[in-house]
Length: 90
Image (cartoon, rainbow, N blue to C red):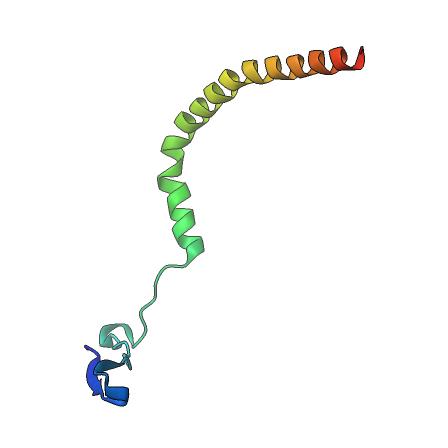
């Protein structure tokens, strides 16, 4: 159902006035109610079917990223310790 457009002549402007009284038609085959699956059902279906196949791959990539970034972070922490010691010695 399209909204009905009625011209508005207030203050010399011809702006369309939109009447949006849209109502959803009920489906007679479903007893007037359309039931969508709940969030819990959708997430259970996702974790049961799709998440298992990619979890191992994503976990392996995560471990590689953590190991790759651990070296520079430790090096930066040691450099900051050295900087603090040299400033404290002044």
